[in-house]
Length: 196
Image 1 (tube, rainbow, N blue to C red):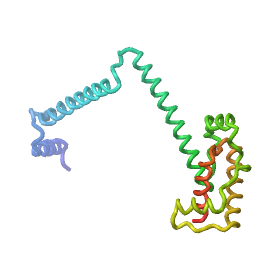
Image 2: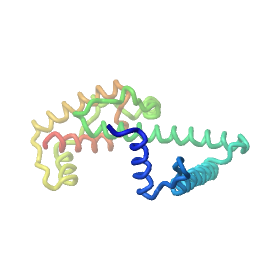
Image 3: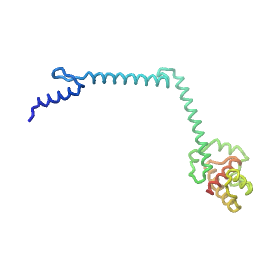
Image 4: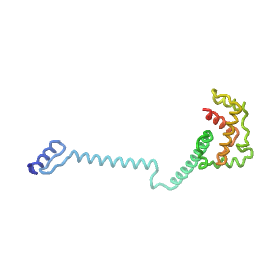
């Protein structure tokens, strides 16, 4: 059995052979590792200071006047509201074009369009809306897609019936199509999508 002191001497010699450590009688130390630790600490402090300076430059100093913070807050609120209205408008537009999708309009009702509809007496319900004639819709389909087939009256009546039923439900959910031109555009898209 090897004595403890022999193991310690072997370990001590092995560590010295790596040439990272130095000895002072029974104590091991490493100038190399001490230098690395100092460099790492210095780098960490420098990066932390740079990060603080960058944050101050971007967001303003913490001790700056509160009016700037209030202006930034009100601008952010205005931007969020504008972005929200734009998203609702885009969503409603997409839902109009995609009759097979589930309607999100009940949670994203567009109050502006409802007030327009109620204030405008020229807007009629989709059920009473006069759809384009067969010749008109075939011309619109050809102008939209050159390869669109010509509809016969039975097929067109079927499309109109489904279209009006679907968008009558949308009107009840506060998601109406407000203009005749828009209704025609949505009908053309409806027919093209339904025939594919």
